[in-house]
Image (cartoon, rainbow, N blue to C red; front, side, top):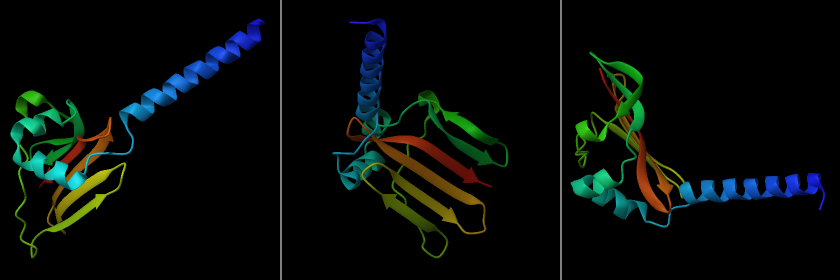
Amino acid sequence: MNKSSIICRGLVVILLLGASCRSAKVGTAKEDFSNFYQQFLTDSSFQMQRVQFPLPGQKITAEVQDTAYQWAEDDWIMLKEFELDPTQFERNLQVTDTLATDEIYTPGAGFYFKMVFEPIKRKWYLVYLVDQGL
C-alpha cells in the first residue's frame, strides 16, 4: 500500500467518525415533544437534567444588556407552565423533528421570551434561551 492511499483511507475514516459523532449528538427526536414539554415544565429534577448548562442565550432587562449570556446551573430559576392572557401575549410554538421553538411576546411592549430545544441522542434538551423584559 502506498503512502497516498494510506492517507486517503485515514481521511475517509476521520470523515466517517466525524459524521457519526455529529449525528449521535443532534438529530431526529424519538421522544414525543408534547410529552417531554409537559414534564419539562412541571418536574424540576427532569428540567435540570434536560438543560444544556452552561445554557447560551440572551438576557436583556433594564439592568442587564447581555446578548451572549450564559445561564448557570447554580442560579437557574425553574421554568413553569405559562398561563397567558391572549389579549396581552402572543405565542408561537413550532415543532419539527429536529428543532422546537417556543416564543412568547407582547407586541410593541418590550417583552420577549424564547426557548429553543433540540434532540440530542434522540431526547429533547433546552439549548438556548432568550429572556427580554424591558
